Length: 134
Image 1 (cartoon, rainbow, N blue to C red):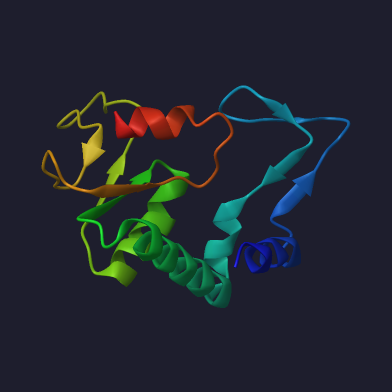
Image 2 (cartoon, rainbow, N blue to C red):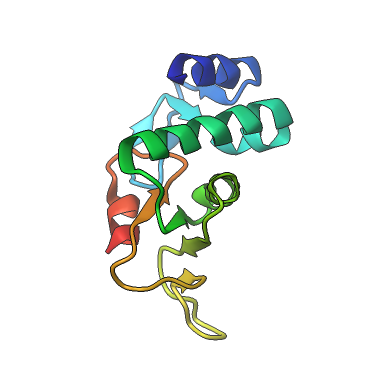
C-alpha cells in the first residue's frame, strides 16, 4: 500500500524537489525534498485510499483504538477521516496551548488510560509527535 500512496503522491505532484534552495522543515532540517500531504485531501479517490489504508494498518497493528488524535495542523484532516472510518472519537493536539479562550492544547474529549493512536502528516525527527503524546 505504501508504494501505491507514493505513486499517488507523485501523480498529484505533492512531492517537490528543490536541491538548490532546500525546504526548511518544522524540525529545522533543510531538505531538497518536500511532500505536501495535504494535497491528497483535494482528491477524493486518493483521500479514500489513504483513509482506508491508515485504518487497516491501525486495526492490524493496534486493534481498535479508543480514539484518534491528529497533530495540528497537518494531522487533523487525516485523523478525522480515520476516526470516522473506524467509528471512534477524534481529538487534536496543538503544539502549544491557545493563548485565548479555554487555553486548550488538546481539543476534544479523552480520558487518561485510553488507547489513542496519534496521526501526524510528516515526521522528520519525531519531535512534534512525541510532544503530542506527552
